[in-house]
Amino acid sequence: QVQLVESGGGLVQAGGSLRLSCAASGSIFSINTMGWYRQAPGKQRELVATITDGSITNYVESVKGRFTISRDNAKKTVYLQMNSLKPEDTAVYYCKLHIRYSSGGREYAYWGQGTQVTVSS
Image (cartoon, rainbow, N blue to C red; front, side, top):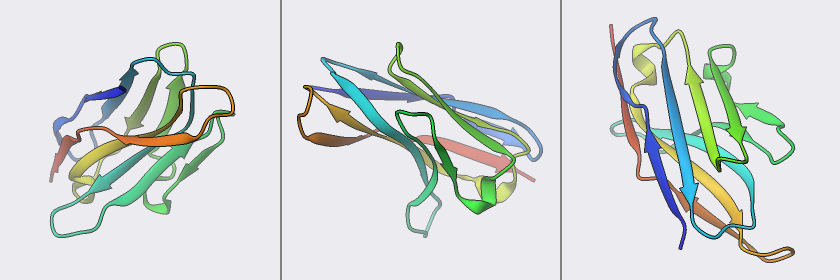
């Protein structure tokens, strides 16, 4: 069974930075797309950024130029470096990993437990 452990959230002033991490553990053959999502109070969960196994990245427009997603395949970890944070970035951030247990096997999606990011003005 795969477990995802997120870390790195917290309280920061506007203009500050945080780095989120999401590490997977378990018997994994490969991790394909990794992503970060966020959910603010009263709002739907939204995609923030994704990175493919070929390291192709995609960002929601509101974070382009401020956030950077990266991955370390050896550590089974995805990161989200968040700079120039704004109060509107306040949300619970979730990682999502697409995992295969065998070559050619089906893909399973797993969510992290979420980590709170609060940006004060």
